Image 1 (cartoon, one colour):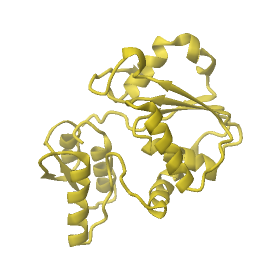
Image 2 (cartoon, one colour; image 1 turned 180 degrees about the vertical axis):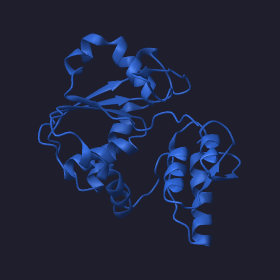
Image 3 (tube, one colour; image 1 turned 135 degrees about the horizontal axis):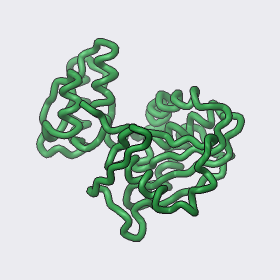
Image 4 (cartoon, helix red, strand yellow; image 1 turned 30 degrees about the vertical axis):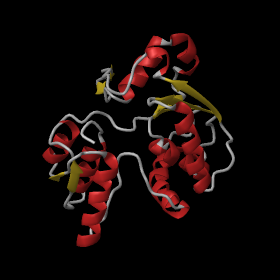
Length: 227
């Protein structure tokens, strides 16, 4: 996906650990170009749709004995595969501040949201009370249903937090294609994802004012790469 930060994120990790990285994409532009600048070899796939990209990557990984990192919206089907995928992402919550009471999560495909919620189930912070999901996708009900199905596959069948959901796409506020830049204290948010959430928060002060304090953490799924 040329507009997603997943490609340069994987490429950056591979570069850090001095591993070869091969990315499958539909075009050499945007985030795919950023991944290439970080050292990833690019294989073009036409048409560049997510399912076909992952299929081609899987075929090449099996043939060459490579580790495949599934990107875009994860399409694994078995409960064991779903749990294994999200167990890796769940480890990210282990360094969350213990005094945090509110966590705000951008939620598009819900891949990251599932991993985070699974992590909070495995390693619950002592002060966390409220989770705010910022839905930045179409079909809120569909993605909510799929999120809880994935959490159930991970063994999470009970919610102990106050979860609030805001539909950022509702009432024509924005859509996936539109870019909404936002910079916070020098940190450039990704215009397609976090930027929309931060603009929505800024444009709805009465709803979010109770959470704008040092006990709230905004989870950055992927800030916009500078390269």
